[in-house]
Image (cartoon, rainbow, N blue to C red; front, side, top):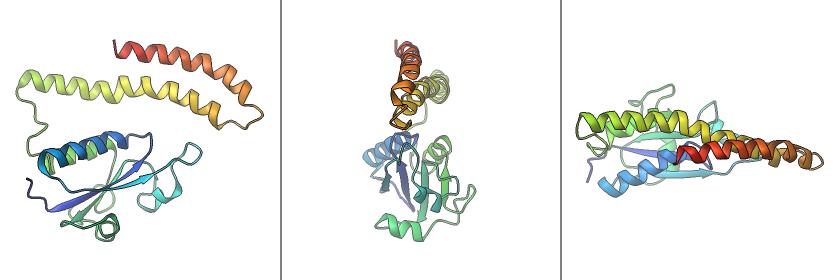
Length: 179
């Protein structure tokens, strides 16, 4: 059990980089009993809803608000951001890798620390692979799929006729990342 002195609240946007942060929070909750709050947002026509800009001006997810003390709910956490956690705004963290590094220092209690030199090397490789190679391989077909979905109804068949083969090409490249 952790000696938790702050409570994170994840503002999670569907199909975004916030999924990695949610996974990490679940892992920490299971391993150390970390208490956290989750506020879920659905995309609006493929984009982040404007409410996220009320928390952080860019309106991108993930956003984690860190509140001092153990707070009972997300609303209380939002009202008391920690002045001691500072990235750009007090108590507000953005960018998945920066958030995960914060979690590692504050909550993981060695859970994610590699056991030795070789494990540390593998950790660096898989971290970079996931945020560079794999993320690009996932994003490319997704972008072309979204273009077809977001196009006005009367041009969708044309957009899909052009985009679907391109998305298929990128999906084949994505499969190579898993083989």
